[in-house]
Length: 407
Image 1 (cartoon, rainbow, N blue to C red):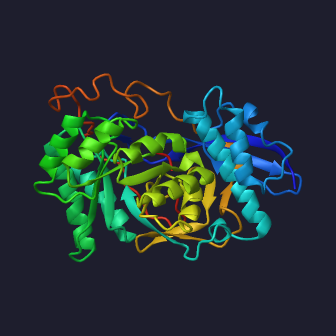
Image 2 (image 1 turned 60 degrees about the vertical axis):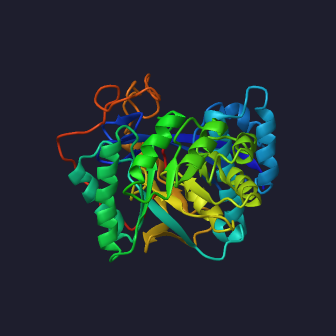
Image 3 (image 1 turned 180 degrees about the vertical axis):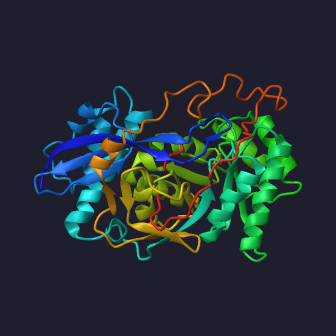
């Protein structure tokens, strides 16, 4: 079997409401989802959800090769990009191609990827994550009631701009999950997307912890600030979770050495091989791992085979436009199917016919760091809490679910 070519597509995740974090909000709720399809001479094609930046240069590393040698080809792609740097979206392109190759390898073996990788249980524990900073209180409650109806008993909220605002919202979700769990204590997490300084982080979290039990605080300071993350971890009771924006084991090592990370996260777009290697590194230091993303299908399969998986992020309860996944959510977990490979199907005609494109990125999108991030004193003065006055339609439960894209 030989790799013969590739195709790229861009579809969208349609949330039906604003989504975002402390850095900004996608007001129309339309988030781009990039897709890479790798073809072979035996008619098997693999799918990877992730960027395709500089893909011609990176694809040259694998063209004509046997896709079943996937881990060796992953290293070849890294070598092809080492001068310019295999980070950011370039690392994402390597991850998308890597995931597509794992899809091909499992299809060729006639097995779902989770079984090929050595998993014995198709159930992957999940937590709810609504990218919810732009929601009113009533909308927030309505969204998490839907998650709760699927058995989710842990939730991660977006916040970081105001202590009392975060306390109130976390309390509302706590009530929803407690009621759904018939009194069982829910798991609560807060994600601030690198919005704070070290002192702000400790002050904010310690104040919340006077009345709330937080499992983790996510990305409290900049992703590479090992000393700062370690200081936050020492200063609060909650675990520090980080890593979704780190690319390559070399970026994890300083954080682990400094005691700067308690829960090691990996983003879906960085690929299956990266997840497996970063999980092994974390396991060597007795640290749990947690995949991040709206469609982390490849990492869900891989999570079944690592001993230190903690929980995986579940964002929207329906897949991107034109994408279907062989999995569903029940009793608080992703349940993976038996389709050989990843179980991902792409309707290229539907994607092209929909011709749905996100709005151009603006300065107030979640992907642009605000000018005053880390220098806010008061919400409403130095920082603005994104809220809206007009209600929007809430999530609707679906049987076919897409867990991907934070970014």
